Length: 397
Image (cartoon, rainbow, N blue to C red; front, top):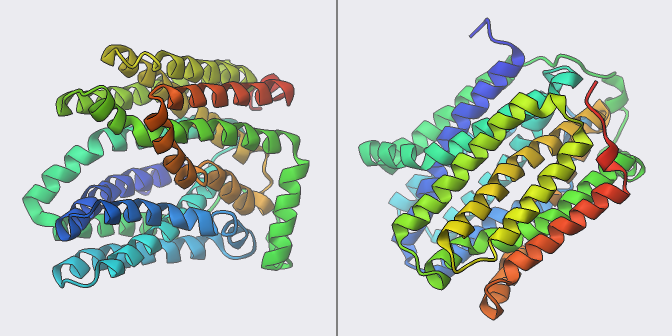
């Protein structure tokens, strides 16, 4: 462990805590369902998970710019450990379901804080020219977690029950806490600059920087538009497959497995060739690929074409996210990293609750509508990339 670099310690910590999170992701909906058998409560669970981003997503960043980043991160991780241990006991002791929803809300809040801090820490642990590689590595770990995590969680919970699974999740947060406790950044700007700022001043300066920095401003705009399309499709995929296309549960499972494998392949290819391509070229190429994927998915009469189309979308989306992280972290000064990281992260999530609602009406009116909206949004994102000049971005130096 002592021989590992700061970057590798953080990646390992992220991998372990991410696998631990699969126990929570897998178990909480099952616990809710076993207690309530209510679709309304299940919908409320989804809303509560999104709510912290809507409430705090644009405001937590300045905390990382004016206070000790390490202390904020440690506090957030410890709180997640405590809440993860509390959650199953609320169910066992038959507390009101609303107490469990409160715990889910708090977990979502601290998860948002932790993810913002993690992005800052991982960027501070490498040189600028290494950002693209570490972005791909983070994406690859995330893809592997999503592919194998649910299966691992199911096996572990069957062996040691829900409480054991939650305790393992708490231990995984403990390990990441240990990693963060010993962390020291590779580079850091003058700390005195941060101490002179209040929360409001820091937030204003960070937001002002965002709107005056050409590349970051238009990159966020481009991804926001693209994400509107993604959020029109993602919540309805299972509904589309089961209700509209009437495929079996096994085929639904295969559909998502193929998408997960495609995302792993996308990350692997990105890691091998991204340094040989200009960032702007990658952005256009991947956006076009995703748009083609949504267009292919219009063929809802064919399970194979819908699966292939979503595989293209999954392949491209992980590559696109890696480039997003790379540009944001490479072009944001240290003193604004908290503010810009939280804003950019939040704007990729904040539209989720609204589009989840809208997508239900869209697919009810016309089954092809969600894919048409997604393709149009991707085309809008491409136009922003071209006319803003982002397509001319070169390689990281």
